[in-house]
Length: 259
Image: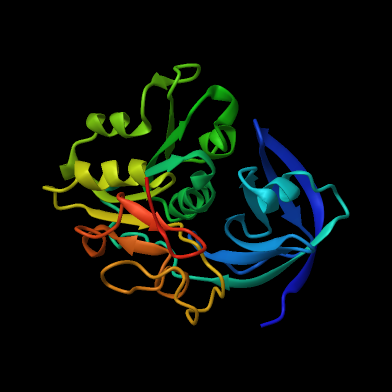
């Protein structure tokens, strides 16, 4: 599959080292879908869509650094959209709880908007290290039926502590679904929180991807062999228990790296 050429039409500074790039093309995407974005002369990386025509990037490597330095009129390529998306619950009697950390808010921001359009009650918990890294609070707070709460590690905004601590305020009997994306230790805490509860829990995983179409095997999960690029990146909690989730992932050479 050849990359589609995109032109950057807007750059939004979301926070410290975090930028949203909007493009001249809108994709038919659902929350959790991603693209393989190609910065010419640098590399290609997987990025979840934060808007049908945009992605939200934190500068953590050479390619993402180059992305955050892009200006209106610059171009990049994309293959996709790829991947499984979050499914919303059928019932509208319960609540959807969304837990996002850092730029992991990208897919769950779309999910929050999709759930709000369906008339579901949504609580979105936004976690960040500091107030300067909180993304999408204003965007999501303006939605009908959405309650947004913030936690920062250093207490500079909202609850002081981890965003998962905010889950203690929710009775599992009132929750239909929990969806999460962000640092994997954070998501492992979410799964642990609902270990003994009858609640549907879904996660969007990040793994090292090369092909993006399920051929190379770089993103396979131990011990199931599931290909995150093609079978994921969204998984239910039951399929992740007892494996590498929250424990380790693999680098570009296939070596294990513990979280």
